Length: 67
Image 1 (spheres, rainbow, N blue to C red):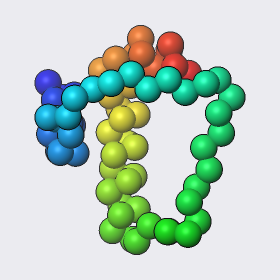
Image 2 (image 1 turned 180 degrees about the vertical axis):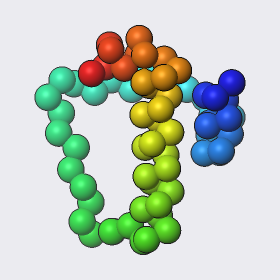
Image 3 (image 1 turned 60 degrees about the vertical axis):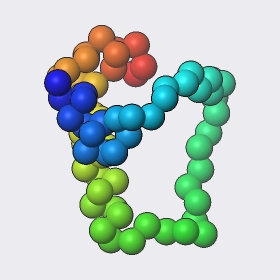
Image 4 (image 1 turned 180 degrees about the horizontal axis):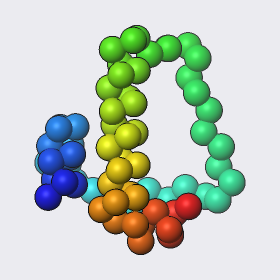
């Protein structure tokens, strides 16, 4: 239920999912050319917080496998 609400809030509930393989050791770097606005930072923090909650409290087996 929480996962569906989160996907709907993010407006990605109707997307087709696909596997995305990222090789171990891949380093992601920030795009300094386009910094986030203050409102975008707030939304970004809300999204990250929701995902952390989802991993730790709703699906702890997933966070164990990833972390």
